[in-house]
Length: 156
Image 1: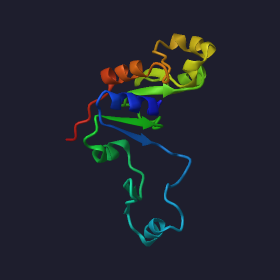
Image 2 (image 1 turned 90 degrees about the vertical axis):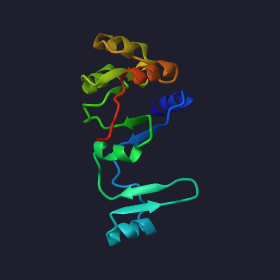
Image 3 (image 1 turned 180 degrees about the horizontal axis):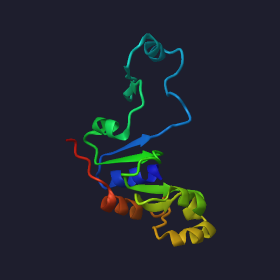
Image 4 (image 1 turned 90 degrees about the horizontal axis):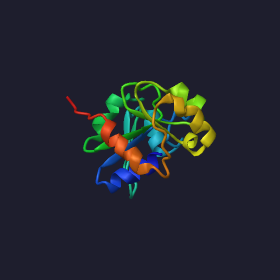
């Protein structure tokens, strides 16, 4: 879903970023590399600059509000994960109606994911009174919804 929305929003001329929560792994840094050794030595921020990207390792977990200033200049920031964030509009990517219900709250603006591919699960979720859209085929509709419902972030 993030890939499809990113491509559609880019097609519309927006600058788009993504933040992926990765709760199952402790770090992206590779053990025993120089950047890892800098961490062991006590560096709090390490910047790696290969030929085609720049990677910034900040050696502590930041909250979304702390991350947003680093994304200055983007029109949209799409988040994957971050289920505990209740103040941000979200599209629930679920496999089943029961899974969708477990994530449903006032911040949900749509359902998508495998649930939208299953007539049985879509029927079960119909009583949730929230749009169910296929990210692969209804990407434009999802992007329209984002344009309508997204929050504007203004740094104070």
